Length: 166
Image 1 (tube, rainbow, N blue to C red):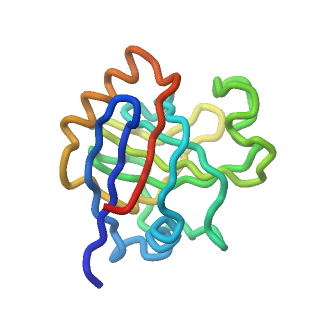
Image 2 (cartoon, one colour):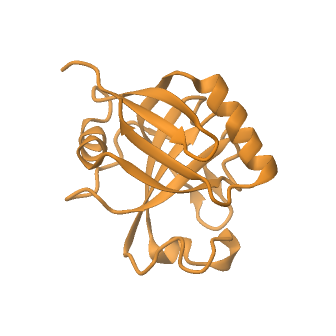
């Protein structure tokens, strides 16, 4: 299979990077994401994992992928896929505005981009939170990392994280 690429963008900031899907390591996850593209949602910056931005989306796969190519220590440029239940994200400690995390959905998909080193997927409420590494940024990570740091410092309100075929 030929390599497939997608564009990851922060719309308001006008910044994007290019990522290669890792079909060889996470074929079921890559197929689910690829078929669902384009995808977009409000962006959040991680509280626990450190250097991560993500969007929470409704489930889009006919069947959620298994934990293929898992990690709890993502590296810069990793795209990760997480699945949560509405109950897992519904507590006030996460800081989502009313209903943002689940909006009545039983399954919430978290598509994340890790932009710098020293990430650890350990949550104080639930313990280890392994994610599926399904893509890697191959171009533009430096510019995206700078925008992510700005998002951390100035806020995410009004910003969208999007994923589309390149």
